[in-house]
Amino acid sequence: MKQSSIHSDFWLDEFDDFDSTVAVDSTTRLIRLNMSRRAVANFVSILTGKNIPVMFNDSGDNMTDGKVVYLSSDIGDPEDFDSLVGLALHEGSHVLLSDFRLVIDLWQNIPRSLYNIAETKGFSKTDVASFLKTILNVIEDRYIDQFIYTNAPGYRGYYLALYDKF
Image (cartoon, rainbow, N blue to C red):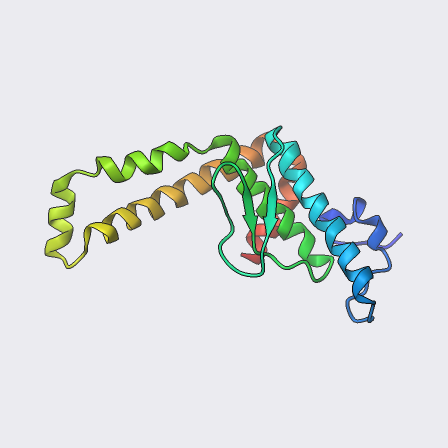
């Protein structure tokens, strides 16, 4: 048995012979991609306890609206799986732990005095709200990642791969 640093090896055994340098037909590549995406989506379902759809796209942000997880990661090589699973777990943890209403409430509850100060520095109301949303997201990201990292130790390798890549 080969030694590997890929955390996903135990569930990617069907890819033992996968070598991205060897040409395979497009049907085989699509089947592998579909199997991989289904496996990644299963992690989100297991974490959340809900049937949350995971949509993959070629570009765009990795995000969730609380109902769907959107991922833009490419699954080209087996080494990509761990960071992709980590990313899916991160977005899935938002479904579990984030208060999506808070962002809407944040926009409505920023004191006018803060906007006034920002305007004297050349920042618009949209700039202020966007900045505060970003700060909230960064803090929330660390909170949810720490929560999952602490309470689901089996996922730690995926989170480490996520942080290594991104």
